[in-house]
Length: 181
Image (cartoon, rainbow, N blue to C red; front, top):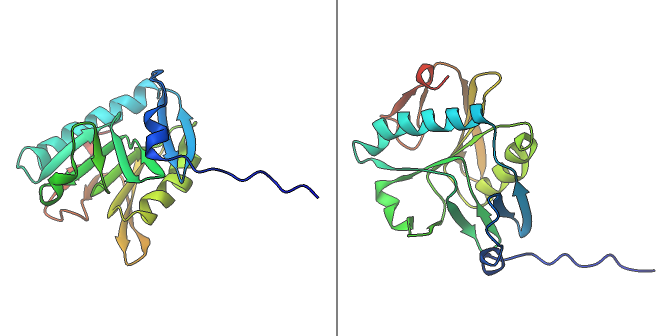
């Protein structure tokens, strides 16, 4: 009987050797994942989310708002590029020149046909496993944001939002989703 080959988990050092080909590369539990460029509406939503979060989080200096491509080193085997991320001021030391070293406080994934199942499944699981406090899944078709907050060792669905969303990590901050859609 022949045993299946052992799967070798890739590391951050392996990731750094991937040639720059204009695609989005990530490591999910040591597995290399490649994603093509998103559609234009996806990018419009990302831009609007960054604008709204920038006004409410960045401008009052509550934290920094960053957008992909930005390497987020969650662990040696988990390197992700969320569409949008927030690092609160108290954790600003995690922001390095070429990467975020550690869990951002909020990650936002705008769902698309090619990434939806991975964003809802593997990526959300990696965010949970590495302690990301808040995760949003933005559905451009339904025009909803499903918000998850870390409670103990699991994510709790805070709600599905259409009009406005209050950040779990910064409860004094509310984003007007009418400005996003």
